[in-house]
Length: 204
Image (cartoon, rainbow, N blue to C red; front, top):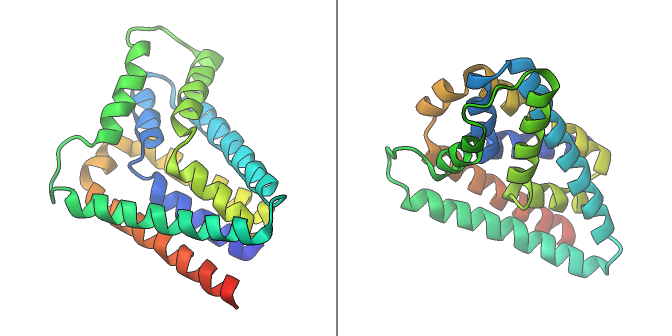
């Protein structure tokens, strides 16, 4: 369980910083009360985490060697894709694609006067839609096939909460100082590392 918690915490925290959902939280927090934005964002991410872990557990119904092979392939696939993306990025890029997509997603709310629970539900809906099919969702599913599900849920949810708190309190300021290239490379290296560890465990 500790292994699943640690893996979920590390993977999500490093992958979500500068991700589209990170910027959605930051942008909404500049327009609406932060506590409601945080509640909406964290509820969406917690629900997505539970759903992803549940899907990972369903995958265990299939033959073990197929699931293990797919998990290893996904870790290496995401890892090398992120490393390649980091290699192609300029050392000092302008606005990232993730930020641009987040601003586009939030643009529909421009000028809307929202308070309280309405803000929470809008933040929840935008975040859940942005996270669906994201690499962190698939990574969480994959982790759930190789680690204790409760550990993965706890670690991933805490990682999401940390990133959401950073985004909502100082997201734009932090995003401007963090190198997207470095974060992408670290995330890619972490995916590859998990792939190697799981492959060794499977062989052993």
